[in-house]
Picture 1: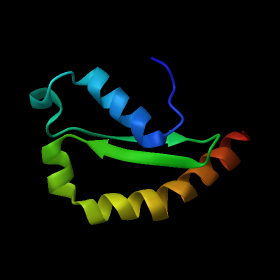
Picture 2: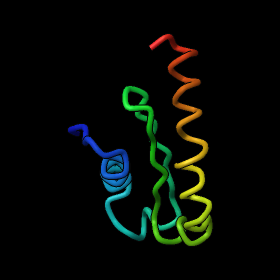
Picture 3: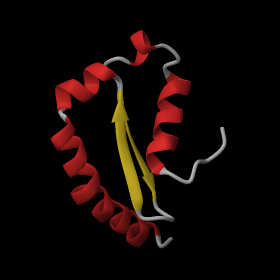
Length: 78
């Protein structure tokens, strides 16, 4: 699988590879961290997104993932 420049595009690609049909991935979600760019993405199937909610997903990506990326970089020395 080739890496994508956009974290969300890459996360969608990973989700589609792991769960090729909507039925399989309907209630699944993933978090992707791209430490080199200090960004991440949270994505999932329709039931996952509905259960968690767009506001929580957006807040997680904008407020929490950048801090986690910084921690991972600091912790691993990258």
